[in-house]
Every structure is written in C-alpha cells, then in structure tokens.
Amino acid sequence: MTDYDLEQYGPGSSPYAIKPLALGRLERALAAFKPQPSEGGSLKERKVTQLNGLLAAAELLTKQIEKVSTQIATLDRFPDEDPYVDGTQLRFSRNFPGGDQVYTYGAIRANDHWYTTGARGLNGVTWGALVNWLGLGLVGDIEVVYNPAEAEAVKAPARRVARRKAQRDAEDLLG
Image (cartoon, rainbow, N blue to C red):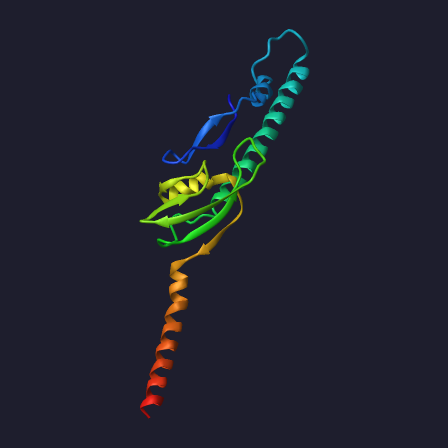
C-alpha cells in the first residue's frame, strides 16, 4: 500500500494529481498487518505487533486526512467562475513547494485571460489555470489593486454631479 498526497500541476494541466510519497512509512506500518509465520513469538505478541502497525497506519492516515482537508479549505477560498472583468489588477504572494521564500506577483485580466508578472508567472491563462497555479502556495489574501467595474461605479455618480453643476452654472450665466 502506498501513501498519497496532492501535488499541484502547472498551468494547462489537471489541477491536481495523486502522487505517491516516497516516505514508505505507511508501508512499514502496514507490514505488521501481513500474516506472520507461526514461529517467532506467541499469538498474542503477533497480534500486539499487528495492532501497533494498524495504530501507526491510522495515525499516518489521520494526519493525511487533516492535511488534505486543510488543502481543500484553502482551495475553497477561490470562486469557481472568474469574478473579475477585463482590466482588473490583482496583487498576491505565494511560495513554491520545497521552499520558504515568498514571492509577490501582480496579475491583470485582458481578453478574458490572466497575465502575471515574474519569471515563474503565467501568460494568457484562464481563471481556473490561475487558481491552479496559485493553489496551495497562496500566502495571505488576493488584493484587488484596481477593478474597472468598481471604478466605473464611482465615476458615474461623479459625472452626474459634474453634469448637474455645469447645467446650474449655465443657467446662472443665462440668467
């Protein structure tokens, strides 16, 4: 039996693939579960060894379940559908597997695709591919630096106020 873990794939690939861990700890723990030859100890000793192996395997599986549950909770932070419009600019930080260094990226949406900064960034990917790339490496939250939809919502009332003021000024001049 092999222990499994989630590993993030790169852009354009399946978001997650099952990857066997090289630890072999679960295999060693389950070795005690295999039938033992009748020699080399009493039946009770063999059953105690078997129980200890099963308990060790259960502990490893419990830790793996907690880890995968945490990963799923992290991925639940991302909406399934792209909530942004073209022109939206994002800022976020992430790290990569096997390292502690945190990198900060910018991303912009254009023509329904995302483009990020950095040598390890993405160019012209869908929201789903961006989420897959961010995946479990996201550190903190995604910051919306600029959202044209929100900016337009602020500009529209300002234009109405400016237009009314211009009308009043024109009326005052005309008398």
